Each structure stands twice: as C-alpha cells, then as structure tokens.
Image (tube, rainbow, N blue to C red):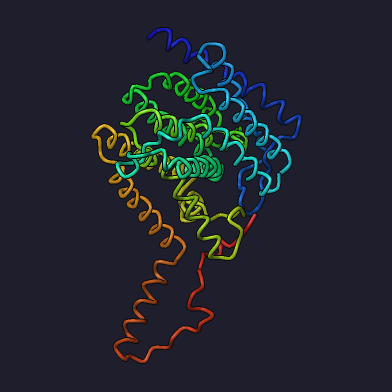
Length: 383
C-alpha cells in the first residue's frame, strides 16, 4: 500500500513539473489557444500543454515502473500518433476529413489489439460470436472514433473534459477490480493521477478563477482514445462485463455528440462544424457559471457511471442495460429541446393541430415555416 502511495505522489509531482516546464515552452512556440468573441470566451492566450504533460508523464511512469505490455504495443503506437496529430492540429488546424481518416486508422489499430470477437454485448450475441466478428469490429472502430471526437467536443469549459475523464477512469478501475482484470488498475490509476495534477491548473476553484492551461486537441482526443480502448479491453476480457453496461460510464459525451450531429444535419450544416450547441454551452447560455456547468456535468457523469457499475455488480443483462440507456438519452433530448425553444414550439404546434381537428378556425403555418428548426439567436453563431 505504501508503494502505491509513493508511486502516486511521484507521478503527481512529475506531472506538475511537466506542466510548469511545458507551459513556458508552448508559449514560446505559440502553441496557445486565443479567445474570440463567439465560441472561445476565455481571457488571454492560454497554453495548450495539458494533454502533452498528462501523457508524457503517463508514458514515462508506464515504461519506468509499470508493465507497458499490459496495454500492448498497438496502444502505445496509436497513442503517439493521435498525440502528434493533436499537437499539429493545435498549432495549425488540420482539415476535418484528414483528421477523420487518421482517427479511423488509429481506431483500427486499437480494435486490432483487443480480442474483439469476444466482445460481450448480451445473450443475443453470445452464441456463435465468431459469426458476428465483422459486426463487432465495425462497432469497435466506430466506438473508438466516436469517443475520440466526443471527448474533443466535451472540452469547452474549464475542468470539464479532464474532470469527466477522471470520474470515468475511477469507475473503470472499480469495474476492472470487480471483473478480476486487476492488471488494468495500475495504468488507470497512473493516468488518473496525471489528470489530477492537470486539474490543479485547469479546474476553477476558490484559489483559481480560471484555467491557466488547456488540454488541447492532443489531450482531449488521446483521453477519448484511451478510455475507449480500456472499455473494449474490459468488454472483451470478462463475460461479467457487457459493452452496453460500460456505455453508461461514457453516455454523457456520447449522447451529446450524437445530438449535435443530428441537430447540425437538420440545420443543413456539417457535423464537424463548430458552434455553441453543446450541452455545456446551452447550460452557460441559460445562466450557469463555468464552475456550475462543470460541476453539474461531472456529477451527472458520475451518477451514470455509478448506474453502470451497479448493473455490473448486480449482473443485469446487457440487453436491459442497453434499454436503460434510453433514459439519459431522452432526458438529454428534452433538455436540449427546452433550452433551444423547440419544446414549447412543439407543444404550440400540437395545440394548433388539436384545435384544427376540432374545427376551430386556426391560421395554419406556411410550409416554409412549418418544419424549421428554431434556435436561440445566441446559438446561431459559428466559430
């Protein structure tokens, strides 16, 4: 126990030291995030060294004191690729199509390192799972790629992406311990410790009014890839852990990303375009402070993760846990509709339809306005 504590302290100190050093270097190399008047509302140029510091410390500790082969060579190579791509993207934005292709290649490498044919989804797929190998492979690649982008999109408020990742890693540690996959606990603990050091500089508190460093695309995408890979390892390494149950641990960023894609497509916009339609932006636009937004979403993520862990402990079938995911998805949808004004519009249209059906003389909306997607004026601004 004392050895684990000493390792954690050493990892924390190393991470803090790397943040301090890299903060100066990233400023010198202009690897900073500058505010704008629309989406990025922070003050001053903020160094984008958080992700570099986190994973530099994690890689150092893993190869110096842990067993790097636990996660496999494919993981470390994919991690280096996505970190490098993120740093380049932070310095000079890359084309969305190019990023997506590289993310898919990285996802294929990660899925190839897991025994994807053993993916535990539920009783429906438990028999002759070899027949479903192509389907499982596609699910794995889409999941990794999706979570990479989900965590990138989540990184919009001080402490949110890092805090949510920390909560997720803690639940995954509990799951790994319960599923007798304790070999994953040490790397998860090391990465969580590195995140704690980062949050000292990134999360708002009575001692810090705003973040002094950001994750950057390198950090957010690498966190998404790592968490996705660990989930696949757990879902393929133990029959006690089903993939739908583990989705509860990451359902918040996944749901918000899917919601964004749908709303952008309905608005005839690219799914990869930037805006202030994210869940954290909606909360802020409706009166939540940055700290309140971060704390609220971290608590929600923790609750969802707790439900997933409880389902694993209670041996709830994967199909039941999958159906249960409709609850947070529906709650998210209702909130978004209410926050964007669409919920009241829907009720108004329904009332007009009922009056029309009863024969009441009601002016019918024109075809041009009947199917518009109304959004608050503050949300129509783009990057």
